Image 1: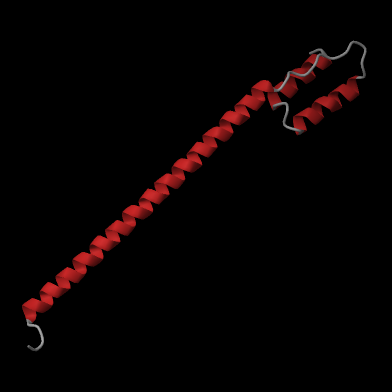
Image 2: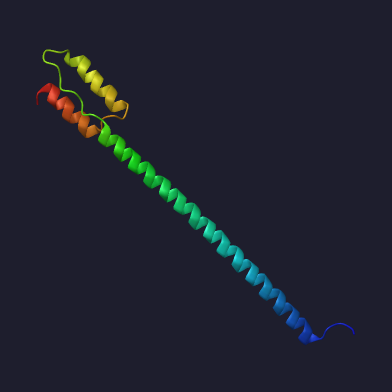
Length: 103
């Protein structure tokens, strides 16, 4: 027995190439599966966070009506504080301010 002939070398190369391709494909499928699972977890967490934010916004009480004869400046400052804290949206703040100013 000596060195393999041309046909033996070609056959061995074909086996090695096929094995390498099969291994590479399996690794790519596994990585894609992991990526899909991770993206699904990220999407689920984002949906849950969005739902929690919506629930928190719905539970936030509307600003109380302005007291009759109360200090207008302190009431406006209180509204501004609520807006900065994220309790009031820009639209809610504008509506409450307009109500206070009577316009």
